[in-house]
Structures are given as C-alpha cells and as structure tokens.
Image 1 (tube, helix red, strand yellow):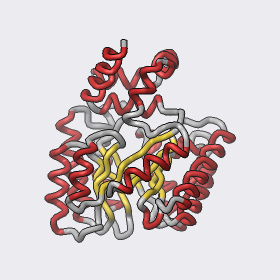
Image 2 (cartoon, one colour):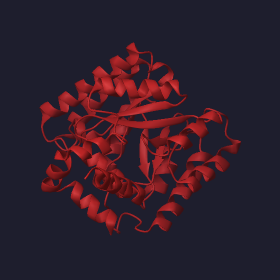
Image 3 (tube, rainbow, N blue to C red):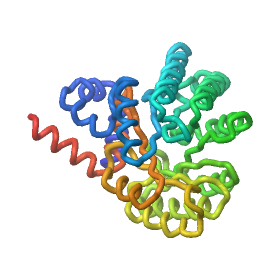
Length: 306
C-alpha cells in the first residue's frame, strides 16, 4: 500500500512541486544523488573508484517528449564520458554509464532513441568504457530489448537490465545468458499490474533467485543488483564455480555503503549506481518506494529540521 502511494506521488505534479521545492528535500536527496552537475558526478566517481569500487552513472531524466531535450541528454552523456576519460576513470570500464531510452526519445520515435543511444555508445567506446540500458515500466520492455539487440550488433558489450518482478523475466534471462552478454538483474521499482508482475515480496524474491540461477549458470556476465543480504549471500553461493571477474555486485549510491566496502575488500567487483542531475524527483521517489527504511530516513530528516 505504502509503495503504491509513493509511486503515485512520483507522478503527481502538485506533490512534485511541494517536495522538490522544500529545502530539506534537497539535503536529504544528497544521500541518494551525487549532485546536479557533471563536476559532482566526476567527484563522486573519483571517490568511489579510489575506495576500490566501480561506477555506473545515470544522468537523471526520463519520459522525454521533445527531440531537443533528448538531444540535450545525449550531449550531457557525451560531456560526462569525456570528463570521465580525462580523469582516467573510464579505463577498463571502471566508470560506465546507464541510459534510460525514455530520456533519449523512445516515446517520440524508437528510431530516434536508437540513433541517440548509438551516439552515447560511440562516446563510451571512445572513452574506453561501456553503456548499460536501464529498464523502465513493462510497456517499454519489448522496445528496450529490441533496441538492445540493434545496439549489440555494433556495440556487443552494451549491458541489459532485467527486472525480477516481471513474470516474463526468467525467460528473458535464458535468452540473454550467453557469452559476452552483460545483464543487470534487479527486483524492479515501478508500479506494475498483477497481470504482468508478481505482487508479494516473497514471489519477487523467489523469481529473483530463479533468474539469478539462470544467469549464473550461463556464459554471460551477471550483474547482481540487490541490497538484500539474502540475495547477496545466494549470489555468492551460486558464483563459487565462476571465475573471478565474470560477475559483479551492484548497489545504489548511498545505500548500504558499508556492505559495498565489505564486498570490495573481499575481492568482489562492486559497482555503484550513481545518479546525478537536477531531474532527481522521480528517481528519489522510487528509492523511497523500494524500501520502508528509506521512507523512515526521509521522515526523520524532516522531523529533525522542522
């Protein structure tokens, strides 16, 4: 119930204006968002890489309905990739980028989104790193996977994201668990109908484990995106027969940083999903919806400063 309410608020313009306009909101958001500028993104990435972790950066923005705005997003990614290269952060994929197709024109024209994604992939290749296509709500899944297939013809290292709460995902995992295929498996953060998505935490967890088994048994490169201690432990057990460097853990910026450090210190590859930009509201609200602890953190901050 709480999750549905928060996700509904993420799409409510009036609530957005109230939350985004409150000074306390921005101070709390700093826990989950690196900042609003490319300087902030590079600074955060440098700190994480120096601390033994790797990074994937998301320039925040989605649901773009204007071609000019989509082009501006592409240019922002190209500037980011150049800055990462200049700082020596992109070498060997230590810092890569995550891209939402809705931010580069998917709702306008799938071909426009494909062309824009190709521009970003080309910039990433020049910088010595890679791109991962973020997954959004279920209505875009087929389109995103189709675009992934097109991109992989020229950029085979383009990463995919699959969401365990969708009933279809185990099959998608089987399709993508092949050599050279980078797949981030997450639980999912959108409000989906029961017809396409598991609704209970238990069902989602079971699906996550089934999907993880498929990816770990395959020849691809699984990226275990979870903060759940049980999922992290299960992933470790499933990965015992895999060679080092053939999988990685992924966690969000600002969530369980001590666990991130623990895994990295144990020799695991840990990639931190680092969002930045001034369009932080939708991302922030989805993080609140994912975990009750995030809501409690936000409310405590409001109470402390009121």
